[in-house]
Length: 511
Picture (tube, rainbow, N blue to C red):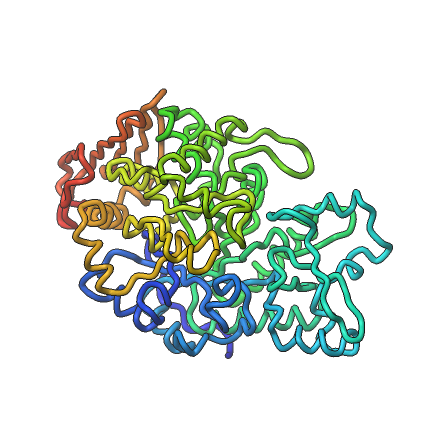
């Protein structure tokens, strides 16, 4: 595919949907029909289209591509992506750290070893530690799972310790190899040609491995991030970097790319609503960069490492102390009826040691008021808000899917067809969330200046643009919120119950 498609004018940054097309609409074209149809029309301005490459249903839910340059034909084709991008801002993943162990390139390497023209694409322990590795070297490698990141695999007539950061199904790439660089560039050009607005650099902190380091977010990693960001910009796309790490590293990363995730927000909101203590969240509001994509839930679990102390390099304190993090984890287990314990840590396969697997709605005990308050806190926090499709429908933990696959994250990856969406929209909490999203998209104050305050269990967040104003007053103990805003005539409006929509219409808002 050629260079960047003609770019349409960029709209103000409203709320985006995070979605697997096969789990919400069945195909890319089906997703577009759902977004444009009566159920979701005018709710979202953008879509993070989770991996739709060949295959979308591999060992890691599409994050183990066999062919990253092609749309899985079961979901559609590049024309379907282009059609979606003509109406919505589209975010798509670039998976530069690894590819599938079933890819043609790696299978040829397995068969022919170093004689394969593709062998240089793949990292082994020996290709990084050319002088050998000590026990200290190996234990210094930072990995999101227990154990060291190598898998013994055939390599021609012999065997090699292949670098596998995540699972044995995902073999790590040497991004400095010429063929790998050409492959990644082909992926970028394909996405740009389909009209994609933003690329998400999946697991980018692990991409470069350097002997004698933690092999995570090193200076060489930052060089790669600068390089791929520059190339994406040449092709007309913005860059979102994904890295679960200490908050200070997130702040530093924010200066290198267009967007970073605010992964500290989800656990901080839970801690605030569990304990009534708003101080850690207020502290973070004063530290965080503004170019954040805000989330409460994603296709992964709820991370806790992002609010904890640094786990490599200098031992910096986190936003929360270890006992406060324990309160979050145990609070989730208590409110989700122990279901999350079944899907987290070593209780289920393919999970990270620093994430708790649950839907956010279940993490809040299916309390409608607290769930809407959590969303209000997210939408009033500066940045680009994204809502995961399960969270959009206030979804419950999918124990049947977990039992079927044994994959912990699948507890939060249920499948919803159009009738399911219609059924969920009849629930007041879902209807109210839609109203809250429309409010965040429509009110002009959210393009202005942000301020926050409060003390103890009360947090206030205010956006102001000229005479336009929107204020959230959150009572963390009561789990209730009040929103005041100016309508299009400058009159001050107020709602003290987010669960009773419609508490505004688009005509009420200042235009």
